[in-house]
Image 1 (spheres, helix red, strand yellow):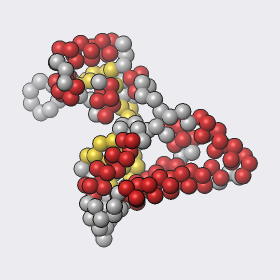
Image 2 (image 1 turned 90 degrees about the horizontal axis):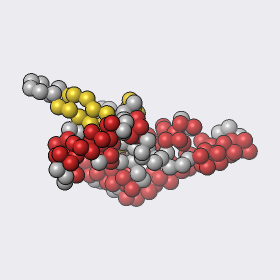
Image 3 (image 1 turned 135 degrees about the vertical axis):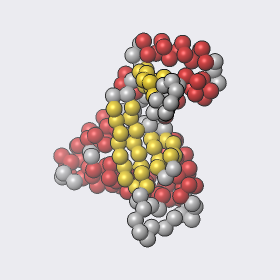
Length: 198
């Protein structure tokens, strides 16, 4: 249940029950119990006329149920590299890491594929990395960031990841983080300039 809610921007009980293959009342009881425990929050969403729909989503406490990679060792090693080899050494190592990841993507996502096919292939690769992705039009949306600690300690890594995703898709993307107390996602939004192919 928590994984379905994390992948979404909130779901009503009926949709959640359908996704989980459970009864409406069983899911409703779980949602109420998890909300009471502080793991879920609920809000009414209006869809034009008619009654609003009650939607459940993970609370800030619920978001913490999802493990991020323990980046402390990597962060400490990168900081040691800076102390030993100079202030740019950590960024050089991160650059190498993202270049290697980009090469793996290039091997597995042929350049001649359509953007739709490339997005689907990239989503499958990012799923294996624990990013919980989904595709929305020409946007790759990720509900989880296993390397969050690295990005926090070394903000330049975000631009490196953005470049890797852009290269994999053959189209410039912008990496945006959307975060509220009970929702988190990273969006790789494709944008086209005159002359872009595809």
